[in-house]
Length: 387
Ligand code: FA5
Ligand code: MG
Image (tube, rainbow, N blue to C red):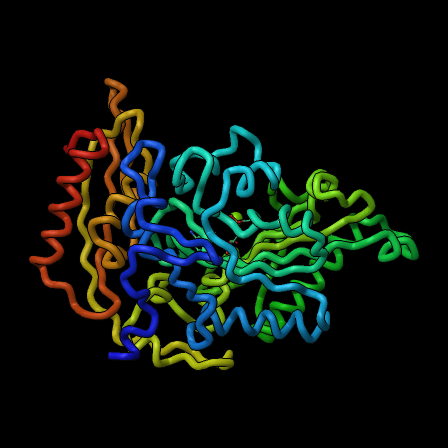
C-alpha cells in the first residue's frame, strides 16, 4: 500500500505551490475565462521532479550532477516556483507576440484572463534575470492543451537553463558574442547528452522561438524516429535589456524531462510517469541512471471510431481534452483518420480513439461505457453533429 500511495497527492482542498497557498476554487472557476478541468487540477502539486526515486527526479538529479561538475557552484537551482503565473510572465516577458497561437485558450490553461498555468519554464527567465541571477536552472511542471499520443501529455516537466556572459567572455575572441554564446550552448548541451546517454545519435535542427535568435532544437533517435527533446538558443537582447543587462549576451534552453527520461529509461508511453502501479514504480531507484524499464506485458488495446460534422468552433485540443476527461489515462491515442468536406462545405472528421490500460485488461463493457460517454459529451459540449 505504501508503495502504491507513494506518488499520489493527499486529497486536500488547499495546496501549497511554491510557498503559495492555493484552494481548488482559486484554480477552477465556473467561468468562461477559465478552462482548467479536473484532470489538470488533480496534477497540481504532484512534484514528480522532487521525487528522488521517480524517473523524472532521477533525471533531474543527473542533470544537476553534470552542471555541478562542469560549472562548480555556478548555477542557482529553482525547483519549487509556483506553476500559476501571470500572462505577463508566461508570454509578454519572453516577447511572445500578442497574436501568437500559444496564447489562445485552445493551447493554454487559463485561470483567468491575466493568469495561466505556465506552459513553459521560460516564464521565470525574466524575473530571475531581474533579480540578478546570471546562471540558473528552473525545473517544474508545465501545462499545455495538446493532442494525445505516447509522447504528448497535458502536464509534463521542463528544465530551463540560462547562462549570461559578460564582455570579457568574448573580447579576446575573434568571434562575435552571439557566435560565442551559440557555440558554448551547443557544447554544453551535447556534453549533457553524452553525460546522460553515452553514445547516442543526435542532430541539431534550426527553429524559431520568440525569445531566442538563433534558435535550435535537439533531436535524439529513439524507437526508429527523431524525437525532439529540447529547444534552445541565444537570448533576444530585448529580454536582457529589460532586465537591466545592457552589455551581456546569454543562452537559454528548455529541456522536456519526460522525453529525455523516455529515451534514458526506455519508457514507451508518457502516461507511465503518472502511474502508481508498483510494477512501474519499483523499477527505479535513487541515483540509478542505467536502468532500462522492463514493460510488464502489454495489455490488449481496443479502438473505437467516432465521426461528426464539425462546426467553426471545433478544435482537436477541445476534443482530446473531452476524451481525457472521460477516459483519463485509459486513452492511449486520439488520431484523425478521415477528414473531408462535402459539396455543401460541411467538414467531417473521423477520429480513432485507442483505449488501453497500462495496468490491466479492459472489459468490453467498460470500453463501451467510455465510448458512450464520449459520444454523449461530444454532442452536448462540442457543437458538432454525429454522423
Ligand atoms: C519551449 O517550451 C521553449 N520554452 C524552450 C526554450 C527555452 C527554447 C529557452 C529556447 C530557450 P517547446 O514548446 O518546443 O519549447 O518545448 C520544449 C520541449 O518540451 C520539447 O522539446 C519537448 O521535449 C517537450 N514537450 C513539448 N510539448 C510536450 C508535451 N505535450 N508532452 C511532453 N513533452 C513536451
Ligand atoms: Mg518544440
